[in-house]
Image 1 (cartoon, rainbow, N blue to C red):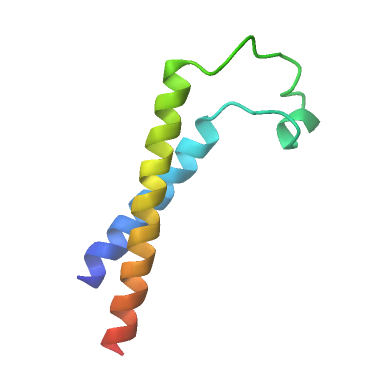
Image 2 (cartoon, rainbow, N blue to C red):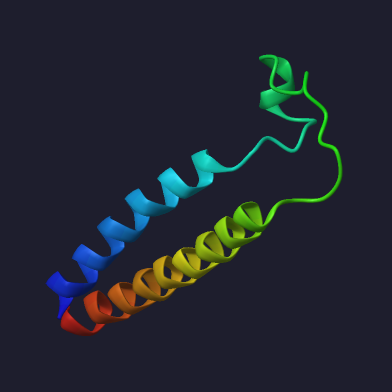
Length: 78
């Protein structure tokens, strides 16, 4: 069981990194410092951006649940 949650944690961590890097810069952060804030957004976010937000939140929930489950399993096994 610990092996399964370790694999899920590793995969969700890597996927979460990729998904966060795919988001557009919102301004005011490091993206502005390196020239990312040059283009202005003309109105709200697109459907693709909203779907990317939903997928990112879903993977973040999977990551958090696997961290908690793995912590509890390791505590019980010791």
